[in-house]
Image 1 (cartoon, rainbow, N blue to C red):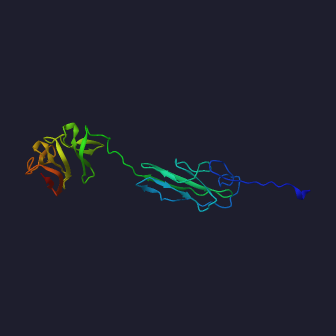
Image 2 (cartoon, rainbow, N blue to C red; image 1 turned 135 degrees about the vertical axis):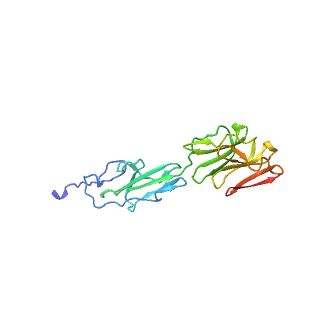
Length: 248
């Protein structure tokens, strides 16, 4: 009888990674409404430490599909199942859509996340030998300088600066008369570098040297302290140097 004809039930489910019925772009089924755009648990931007980016949607029945490759997300993209990790040094753009059977897929939610990391200034290991008592200073133009006891120069003092994409010696490498201990480093108000150290060539008495534009020369004479000096500190008031030390 006509009233007893069997009925056929059609069930459509849309999911990431598979073609489905109900997507606004599928063209096969009319959409009742558009799914809300996904929201992110962390605002896009730059972060100091690794982060986990969660994605959710106002419609709890919706499924979230996303990409991290720069490609436009679709129902064949990765199914969101948990927070997305962004590691140190990484820059990741997360683009996501929400989809649900019978509704048009959402607008794309897009955000870029960057996590900072240390990067080498110039080539790693740029010194010619071992470096001890390393000290750093940066001049008013942003140029970094380093001073150190140079193992390739019989433990004498060397100062280098970063310029033009590489590190170069300021004056001669190993310019001190002998090996140095407790090296300290500072720039005066004009950006002129100076070092202070316990001078092994002068019975560990204190010596201060400053760069004059072509070479290094002592200020006030080498080994000027009344006795051996250790735990040195160096600072400038304008162009006037001040040194503190433990007097032995």
